[in-house]
Amino acid sequence: MNHHRDTERGGQLSPGVLACVYGVMLSASVGWLWYRDRLGLLQTNAIGERGPWLAAAAGLVVGLAGSATMAAASRRWQAFRGAELRIAAALTPLDDATRLGLALLTAIVEEITFRLALQDAVGLPIAVAAYAVLNTGPGFLAFVPVAALSALAFGLLLDTGFGLLGATTAHALINYLTLQRIQTP
Image (tube, rainbow, N blue to C red; front, side, top):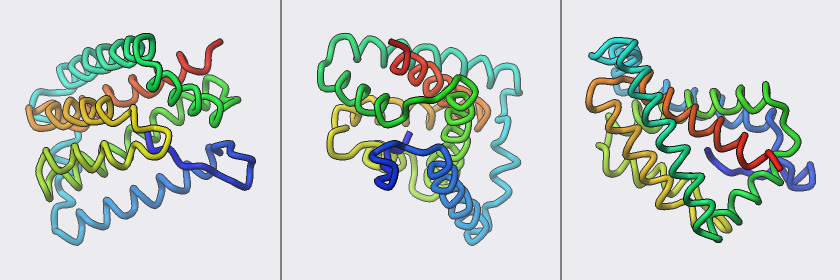
């Protein structure tokens, strides 16, 4: 999930601001696909070649494994835990419905942006690097390896026929479970 600050709210990250940022990202990604005459990828990659049940199951497995990996990293790596605490402070208070909506919004838009539009244009390694760099920043450098590993897993789900459904399911699950974990005292 991209980490932007809304300074007008004292460092609080507003769901409304995120919705605007992600709306721009989605528009740019769809525009890029259209410009490159690749808009059909949305349809051909939505479910993937393996069908909806296998795509959703693969996303579930990857999402649960990714969430468990992040929880383990948080327990063992102080810098990672510190970054999570900064995110939790910036996002509080979010109720469960808002957390779910945020997890879904960010997963859908980031998968269309990084896996579909970018990965199709520049390949998996550069898409992984771009995702890792854009999901980190000052105070969040501990996320670089986790973001890169996540991006690789999501990209491989797409490349191995599990489509956007598999990648988005995994991404949304990681986002939701992580947000729930870091916001629960």
